[in-house]
Every structure is written in C-alpha cells, then in structure tokens.
Image 1 (cartoon, chains in turn cyan, yellow):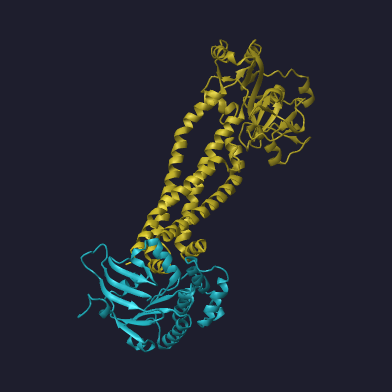
Image 2 (cartoon, each protein chain N blue to C red; image 1 turned 120 degrees about the vertical axis):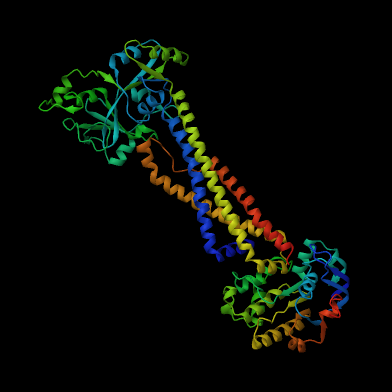
Length: 225
Length: 413
C-alpha cells in the first residue's frame, strides 16, 4: 500500500471548529495511477498538502510509502517529501529567475539522492521531455507554458520519487500541449514504476486512468452535497 | 546552490535591490568616514608635537597659541620681544629653546623662521627627529629648507631659487622678490604640518623685512644681498617659542614664571593639556557626527528590511514551490537573511571603495588647508568591529522579513 488514510480529520489551527477534511478510509496501491476529480473548494489542496506532509492531520492515521506521516515532525516530513515525493502544480512550478537546468538541480539540493552525475541525469530527463538543449539555460519565465510544465515533470522526477502528486497540471495548457504533457507523463510514470495521484476537474483526462475517484466520495464532509 | 538562489533572486529584483544597495553604501560610507576621520584627526594632532614641554607666545587663548604655533592654523595675535626669548631661554631649568617666526608664505605654504636648534630638538610622532631627504640645514641668510609636500607639489629640487611673499595668502602681491632664497635641503615626509612648511633662519626673515615698514616695501630703499650679509640681523621679535626642560618636574614652575613675566604679557602652555582641551571641544561635534551616521545606517537598514518584506508578498508561489520540493521553513528564513547579508556585504565593499577614493582625493586638501593628516588606508581593528556591528545589525533588521517568510512557509494557506 503506498497511501493509506484511516479516520483522518483536518481543520486549520485558526478555525478548529470548521473541519475541511474527514477521510474515514482511502488507500492507493503501489504503482497505481489514480485520477481524483472534484470541484475546487472541496478540500483538494488540503488533501494534497496532507499527502505530501506539508500539513499534518489534526487526527487520524496517515501513512505514505509505509511511513506514518502523522507521527513525523516537521523536519522529518520535509526530508521525506524531498526524498520520496514529486509534486507538479497547476502553474508556477519553476523558480522564475533560474533556468531549466537550475530548477531541476535545485530539487536535488534538498534530497539525499546521489549527488554524482546529477548533471547528466538532468540533461537526459530534459531531453526525454522534449525540451530542446537550446532552452536548457533560458531563464524559466522565458519558456512557454507547455515547456514550463514539462520541466516541472523533470523537476518532480529527478529525485526518483516513489509517489508523484499532480495538482491540475494541465489546466493552463491548450489541447495540443495537454495531450503532449499527458502522454509524456504517463509513459515516464509507467517506465519508472511511480504511483500517481492526479487531481483535476477536467474529466476529459480521465481516459488516461484506470482508477477514478471523486473527492466528494473520499471526503465524508462533502458527501451528499 | 543556496548562494546562487539568493544571488539570482536579488538579480531578478534589480530595481529595488540597486536602490537599497545605494542607500546602504552611502550610509556605510558615512559611518566609516566619520569614524576614520575622527580617529585620524586625533592621531594626526597628537603626533604633530612631542617632547616639547612648553610653548610660549603672546598672551592669548591656549588653544589659539597651540593652533598657530604648531599647526599653522589661524594667525598669531601678537609678537613677543627677542629679549624675552633670550631671557627665558637662558634660565637654568631650560634645556633647549626653539624660536618661531611666522607671517610670510610661499605660494600658500607658510614660511617659518627658526634656528638650527629646530632640526636638533624638534620631535614629532613618537620622539622622531626631522630628517633630510636631500641636502642639509640652512647655513646662510638666504638658504631655505622645504617640507616634503612643498617639494613634491611645487616640483622643487635642490639649488632652485624661490621668492617669499609677505602675509599668508596664497595670492599675495607683496613679494620679497628682491631677495630670492636658495633651496639647500628637503625634509623627509613626517605626516605633520612641517611637510607643508618652508624653513628659513631667523636672520633670513629679518633680512627680507629690512627695507620694509608697516608691511609694505619702502620705495627707493634698496639694499643688495651682499650688503645685508654684513648687517647685524639679530631679530627684534618672534612669534612664539618652544621649550624643552631639563626636568619635567619643573614644568609647572617654569610655566608659572613665564605667565607672571614682568616685562611683557606672555603665555606658556603644555601642548598635551591644550590638545585635550581641543578634544573636549571636539567631543560634542564628534558625538553628533557619530549619532547622525548611526541614524543614517538605521534608516538604510530599515529600508532594506522594508524592501525584503515587500518582496515576500510577491514570492508566495516561490515559497509554495520550495516547500513542495522539501525546503524547510528554516531554509526560507535563511534565504531572506542571506539576501540581506549579500546586499550589506556588497554595500560595505562599495562604501569602502568610495571612502578610499575620497580619502585619496581630499588627502592633500585636508593637509594643506587644515593641517590634518588623514591616511588613506582606513583599515584598522576599529573598522573591523564596525563592519561586524553592521553585519549583526543587518541580521537583526532582516529578521523581520525573514520571520515573515518563515511564517508564510509554515502555514502555506
């Protein structure tokens, strides 16, 4: 089991009486690719932040890759995230003033991933993601949105994570770039045996996935809404 | 990578960073300049005279006497009679006496009439005597020895002839052009007003004024140089004189005797006491300057802090991203601190460069117009501590935006 939620309850510390999430049970198996859909404002970012250990659950058991995140302190969570979890956002995936190579390199800075031959690995990965070498050293805010999102995949995968979290990664892309993005992503995920949690409200992407979960089903607070 | 991130982030916000950098540079420049000049001025004044037990002149303020006799700042109030000098110099407690006659100049540099004892007994710094770079002391009436700055600035060498002018303005029209002097010696640099001085014998001073009355030439009355050398050139009056005593214990006795001298009103001062009076006067000014420079630095540091704080709002996505790839809130705190430190370090380097350039440019002006010898090398232990304080203040001031960054990293939403 890669992900397992058990009676996880979360409310922000400043509003303890307004719970955002209550997940009685939700599991994702190793190497599974899950499409989670739901409208915005139903605890999507909170779920992903819990999953990546940026937020700690108020109550309940949450284990990722066999480790109890709810038992870890902040520092251990940061370390764990750097080593085992890749994250792709909707947009602003790159530090705008660094170039593509530096952005990917920055991700290795926080992990315990072997630091030798990082450069070759980065270049290999960027090449695989169809980023032409001419663009490797361009400041990342000068790249097109499609290129930026693909560099984001490279950044998320450079530390060879076991789990990849994608938070609406295609919503800023046009049809062509979206298909391009999805096919590269799916092939890399399969090739590297990575578990994928992909969140989007765009149901047209669901055909890439075998398992499709509705967030409103996972989060009991949203059930029946 | 950490450093690269901070550097590139600053470069990305060039506009506001450069303005902050300039504010910091100016403030560090002011702080270091005030501190250096304050320190050096004291040093320079204290080094100008040593081993002189008493300075005697016409009755005036003790500071005034010190300033015009030693530092050549301001004008003497009155002359004293040669007989008084001879009388006091021959008293049993006195080991040596150096008479000084001021009032003439050469191209803005002051001319001082004295005796050969000046070269023998006058000390500066830590008891160093005057040394000749070239040539020797004056032997004849129309011989002149020049200070190192005079030689360098006016490009003079030995055996050249020069004409003294009456009064101390640099553009005097009343020249003693009928009696040119010959350069027989050039002194080594001392870092004191001696470097800016031309030294002649008292007889020389007497000789060029022999056909003068009431500060102007008497027309038609011409005496040749040969004739002058035949005359008795014993001076009638001098400006002041310095005394060295056989025993320092006698200083106050001799001082009291001189101050009570019956034949004319005289004033004897201890150079050290007069200097400390000067410091007392300068202290208020000094502290004011210091306070202002500290306030300027505070303002610049607050500006730096405000600039960084404003940047944090626009860096929300960056925080989120760095957190997602595993950066801890501490890392983000340190990132802002590092950005602040980079600005301060660069400002400190620029400020020091600016100070160095300024000191090199105004060095000569300060020396010639104020008798202040400020070294252009300002690196000292003092400066090191100041820089340390500036760095610590930066860390403290940058803690405000850094904490903000830390908080926004901790509670992402």
